[in-house]
Length: 114
Image 1 (cartoon, one colour):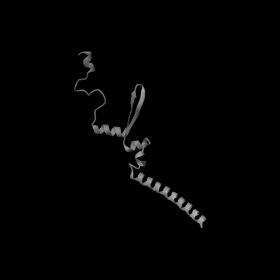
Image 2 (cartoon, rainbow, N blue to C red):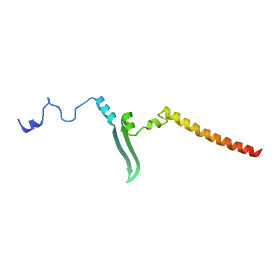
Image 3 (cartoon, rainbow, N blue to C red):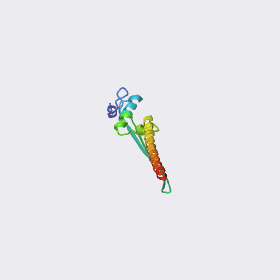
Image 4 (spheres, one colour):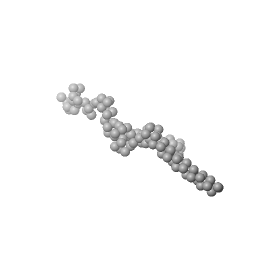
């Protein structure tokens, strides 16, 4: 037996590297731990920067994202009906305050004219 034969375990032995798993196992691990993918795209012309696009992608489950302090989908009115309802209620309250102020000013003006 040569030295090379000792290093190569053969087809019946476990392969080198991490144990293989199913795609579902991999997806579960990624969603549980989270993964960040980052990259930049730059377009230069004659050493003049024309465009820079910075991409940041965070892939995780909702629970993992919340643990990381990310919950923008709960406050974005385009994605959350509760956030949309809250935004409408806030806007409605602001408009009512403005209307009350305008009506009060109009009443004072009308009282001064009489």
